[in-house]
Image (cartoon, rainbow, N blue to C red; front, side, top):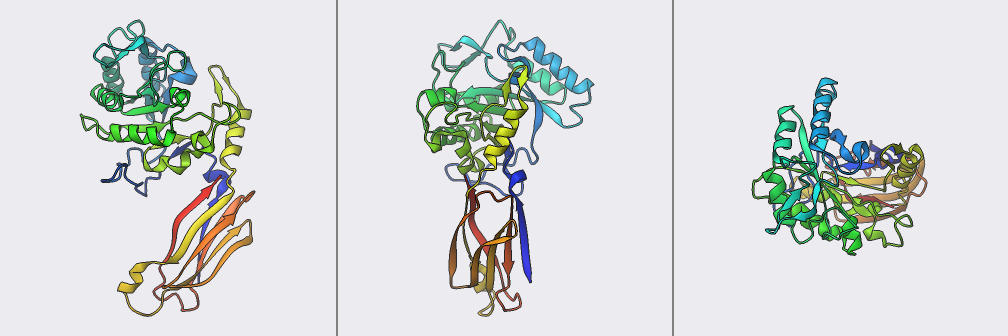
Length: 341
């Protein structure tokens, strides 16, 4: 008897924004319980960045909220109205350290606009940057103010926060470190409000310059599942009025370039609580019909490490056999399974 799990690499890894799985709780940030599943399916909606570019206004956003309802898009699942960059005042913080909306664009502030969005049965998203505010590099930055800003977004009753990395890379920060710290601040906001965390690192090489792998968007998969509900996996597919399908395909290609599969295979320790007999399995990694890894028979007292070259593979099959004991007490584990670029 063999059990088989098929992984479609071209489909599984090519998403431009990756959604955290609903069925598996990711690791907790800084200890404690795992973050709640805030979006069990990929969230959908509208964002000012591609639609309006810079300087969105209260009136424009209210109009879009109305259209999402009247057009039926809200009922089809497009429920997020996301205020992206350039919403803050030219001096983005008050003397007290609070973020300030641009009064020309949002004369009544953001809280009444969020209330209006909610009154339409929609949800509201907001934007910031993980780096410190550096004029000319980003419109605002939360660096040094993570908890204060998370508390303020929650007090305004936003449902989601996009955290960019423009000033993060300008300040040469480590994305894993700063995004993890921001995730903790969101989870610990003073209002106790659940908010989706969209991790947005757009940095790629050579497009942005010569950056190490760990600072690039293509590395976000290594840590984002434990701290965010979704994360960016490559750079832009265009700008306002010029979405480029060739760049959409470029991003799909970039996300499909997985070259190594690593895992530890063995028999679950729970078999010891069942009895002294049985507990053997075989493990195979099959790529496009070719056996790339064969563990041989693995007993309850042994494990096997697998480091498999999967360059160019389109379909992976992970196959478990019973090891010759008829399947008795076999509890096969693929531990720490990862496919890396």
